Image 1 (spheres, rainbow, N blue to C red):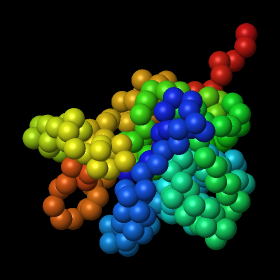
Image 2: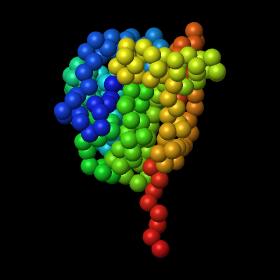
Image 3: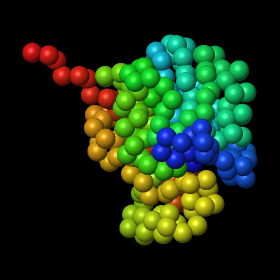
Length: 230
């Protein structure tokens, strides 16, 4: 449940600032690395990446330790000040070059077609404008560049879906830094014009009670290559 959106194009004027939730998330996410198996999920998410990578909503930087050595550079976008400070510390320990910068998912502060891959990891639940954010992802990827994602969202049947939607309309976003439970990233990627690759449903935790946050997906998509000139 990353915090990633400062509003359309206004990250510098009105940055995300959720200090209470950010502190909670920083503690919970570290515990989840072992208790919920998140460290292994990060390994699967990032395996095989290479070249220049942009990570959107980097949070406290827990992905950084899992980037493979073939990655030449990671540009990590994180608007929340407390989490960004923790990400800066994590970047110093990373085995690949990581540059942590402020910015909003809907207005990424980087050049077009500058990256070989984009990483979305527990972030799309909390962007304010999913369509615009995915448009930015497509803009900054080179043609044929890939998107790696691990996100939670809609799932679990009719009763659970109704519960997720009810929470989204009431208390959940206010308590969790703008997080939403019932978004469907796979459908959103398809609507944004990405070519979907292998993806699968994942339950977190794998064993135990099914919570509104348990229904996740892990996968890869590509920005379509430019059509060949005739």
